Length: 360
Ligand code: F6P
Image (cartoon, rainbow, N blue to C red; front, side, top):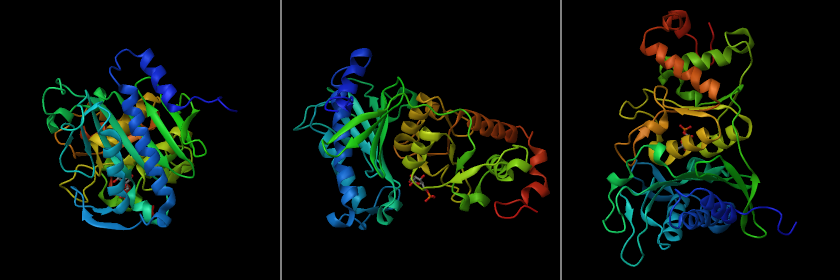
């Protein structure tokens, strides 16, 4: 097949022709992001051979140890996306402040936010990691004024595009520009992402959930109730057995949910009371929420649609519950019942002594 599949550039240009709201060099901006992901895929796949594994010896703004690949992936995004003239500024998990475009490069109308290498605890053990990105419009005429961090603080519902690259057994790019979700697979022979998964959808029902169960004692009652009911399986109120997965890489979890359904939770917990959740709103939760909603699923904090959360800071954290519609709705209902005190029967001493590993 010499010219059978649509590559990502053709897809983007056709999308931009269809959607007149995508102004300027939108498709070229996303193409630059795609090039960043290809460069990162190359580094990730060479691993030890390229000497890129291990710690960098520095910390990011969240106080987390940076891996060499975190830093290299951040650089890849900056270098591939700064010169095209499509962006006014960038922001990333790895940088405390925004990265304004100006000086030697022309400034454009879009803002790019990214997590250059998500799930980086998996890097040194050769398991799946990914990159996540979100495109916003700069609210003012950014070509005139110097953009600020405040320009980025828009609810996720204003995202123009969102996507991720998964560096797994094959490298995949999953993308939405607001009209469905499309998956592309990197053909390394020709160096192109080819459309392999058009119109991805998430089935509303599932029997699979993903959560870091070691945090069970820190979860809030609605999540304890939900997981406990899943674990009870056929013999409990759900009347069916559930399966559990945890890859510790959000990109990999969301990808699995797009492929076969499921629900992913990194809920609010009391482990560190200063943090309302683990995942970051601007470059983890928002882009994934847009993808999940575009695929027919839901994404919630438990009490609010993630895409409606008004950001207060670039690196703000948020509780995340996303995936198959029926399960996310159930979890929202449990949160609602908890706030209203309607979940008393589930908070009885008998119920609260149940843990993942003991059911007495
Ligand atoms: O920082 C983000 C992240 O690596 C996600 O990709 C992943 O879902 C989560 O953290 C894993 O957290 P934990 O190490 O607590 O399981």
